[in-house]
Image (cartoon, rainbow, N blue to C red; front, top):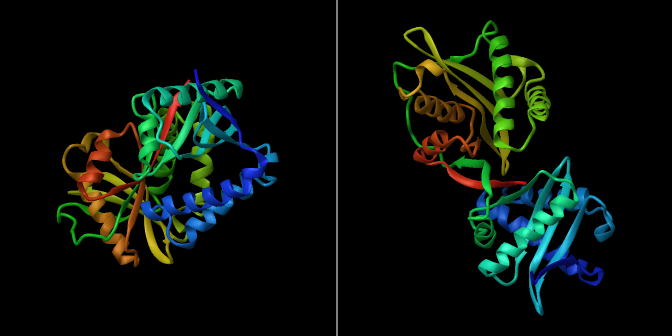
Length: 312
């Protein structure tokens, strides 16, 4: 093994941090995952939280990737709760296949030393070298952030009635939605079953502290001939200073699938987003949900960022 990962020299930190800030901002702005100052703010948060004392920080480490006299790039790593996170990966020289194998082997060794059970890396569509590194080396897509913008002019079929959820329906929805999200979190590989239950509960309480009366949260049921066939939950966000609708849950009842109701619920999302003044719709989908990804891409959603994981 000739590829080495060694600590970044302190004399190079200022140049590295300036270039990395620019890279983090550019990737987010180009992909559309963050707009304008939102991308700047997120990049600054990374440095504030993970490198508060620069290279002396304990929350993460910055490494040089070298092969002999050739410097291939840099790695910014963080470890937490049994996971090794690749915060940023920047290549100055595209690694060969064998060098890529050695880089991943070195990451595995670092993860083992940190007692991590998986390696996680987020990649944007334009991050070609990062994608080449994960392809064919055991990584899988854990989750995908997607966006539909601008909103197309589509209508909901007349026989599918998507209306606000009633207070009577809300308790059973809340119980089922929270439990289903915990199952998905565990199946994605990012959480243990026990961690998934805690995380699902945390996010549910964060989004709906006042249930149906929570400002900025819109919940619906879809019915056909008086029979419920699905649910829809939209949370309103801000995107570049404009209202943005984010799908927090969309589900077709098990005995009503493969009838086109999922597509109609997505059309209803577009209708409600327009009503609420939004010009875009975003969502998160787990990588294992191939049918959902196919549906969303068929409707024009594009991938903003993908989270890859490697189980150890």
